[in-house]
Length: 119
Image (cartoon, helix red, strand yellow):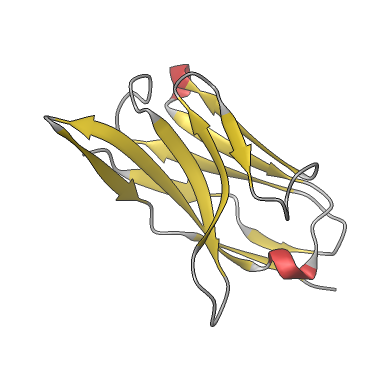
């Protein structure tokens, strides 16, 4: 299974921007979906954005128009550009990969990167 390492989190003021990166340990060309999820303290982990191998994209309603997910197959990396950040975007952000393994599928998660939006 693929291993994932997130980076790019940090502290930013409301209205600011951050770009998260998710580096995979192998080619992501055939990984059928890669996504970003987040988990705020006391809340369940939720989908932020997902991109398929065919570049179909889905966003959570709360981030539409502010966040952009993209993938660079040559660099085995998925990005999440976050603009117009709000305090409610504060969370640990996780990268996830869903791939076909034998007759089934398997999911892999990164370790997470903290994003804090505060003045």
